[in-house]
Image (cartoon, rainbow, N blue to C red; front, side, top):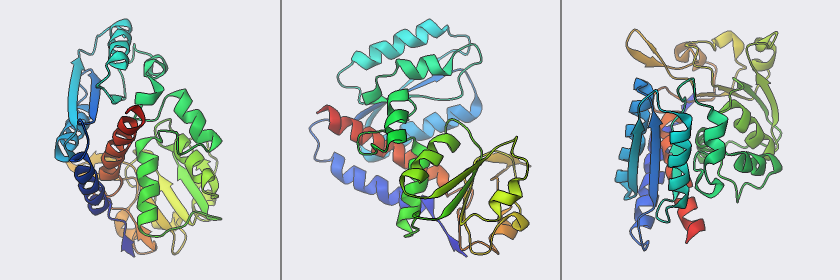
Amino acid sequence: MNILDGKSLAKKIKHNIKQEVKHLERKPKLVVVLAGDDQASLVYVKNKVQACADVGFSSQLDMFEKDVEEDVLLNHIKSLNEQEDVDGILVQLPLPAHISMQNIIDAIDPSKDVDGFHPQNMGKLFSGDLENAFIPCTPLGIKLLLDEYNIDLKGKNVCIVGAGFIVGKPLSMLMLNYDATVSVCHKYTKDIVEYTKTADILISATGVPFLIKDYMVKDGAVVIDVGISKVNGKIVGDVDFESVSQKASFITPVPGGVGPMTVATLLLNTLKAYKQRI
């Protein structure tokens, strides 16, 4: 069993970005928008702002109360779209229940959509125009992690557990673009084990602690754990690491696997947005 070390790869990516930023005419700028007081979201956005500082980016955190009106957020995004020095705009999800996520995402200028969720970027991902798309950060982070360990996707059976908008759906498209055979399981899948047992690469993104047990995993499979939950004050993933690591050829830890890669790829997308604008 080998550990897919997202922490060390993210560090390497950040180091490379930092070296590149030293030679740029101006600092790339990311604006993070947070509506509400969700504690997990607050931690995530602070990590993103800190990561910007680490590599020499300029960043801005715009915070709104959880009862903010949708129009106020839409107008704020419009103003950010028009600011020449803003390269990337990230609206932290989830949004308060009364605000339409789709309306907010649609309002972001696709050329500043460093989260990759605008329909235009999703469409480019769907059509295989990866060079010009902003690929959502977690799927892109997973792909770079697989690349780092020379794990080829071509012809592999990939099973993704979790069909969410942020990870599962875009990740399935990304894997298809690299010639994998992809199954996507969700809460209505009749027999998840039927799919997980045949997967060369098993990726779980549900947020259900210890959902993936050893009997669900094929011997020698690559197992990627995107889930983050807290159990008895400890951060854990979707995968029962102790037992599954006995069967897997490669596995991501939680924490220290996919999480750091998500932040690193946000920085990569912001740098890409900067370069496309100059």
